[in-house]
Image 1 (tube, helix red, strand yellow):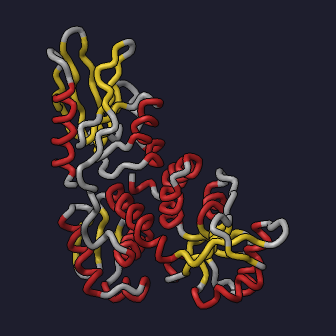
Image 2 (spheres, rainbow, N blue to C red):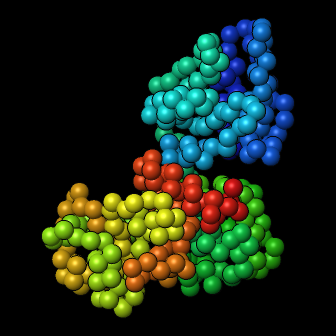
Length: 341
């Protein structure tokens, strides 16, 4: 959903639910605190300023990244606040309104509106070149090399194995969405890193990760992750990438890993399983995923292997739906991807 359309629908939700003489009016556009717009909520003995962030397809995992407002109330406009998201926002005293007619606004001791449970008639499925496994690969390439990307279509194709036609269509789509500016052949500037990052997380979660997952496993005995990693790196002569919680811990020193994700060449799975003594298990804490491109390699080493680059690990953490991983993702973004904020 286009941002302006989303804004208008959420404004309608608030105004429809507000009781007279209350009014809700936009008074300013984006400000330095990270808000996309500032509104005035007034009427009777109430006169409050509200800083609003507009986020399509907002996830619970993104709540820690909502910009704090030091002086005013903060509010989220989104396409659909699921019951779980609505409950979490209420617990954190974050106001919200969505395009389906759900909203929460509270000025203790007075509750102005609290409506949740209204569901969309039709699922708002993302459309576009980005929302595919191949589109996700290109988005990751741009974020890894951003905010100023100097690479021809052929360079990108060589990096991630996506056709030139697909790359061209995606670049034009991002340009039309004002997320990217084309300065010339092979010269692109990401001008809306936040939007590009959210597109990447969605595409990674729903399209790319299911394609890359080769299987879940358990290891014999009492496995120690660093030993398994060293054995995998030795077996594959370093051609392995650490992802998930272990990668996040290596990059931030904040998350104690409870699972292990290794990216390995697809044809090497049998050898890795034999060396690490892995058995298939639907609830296994060890995942093997396809190492589809050298672009996954980051600049950090851990336990004898390369860690995936921060943009890739960020998507893994945000796709997990786990609160502690989401908090780690916020730290990782602040440290490595601050230009997207």
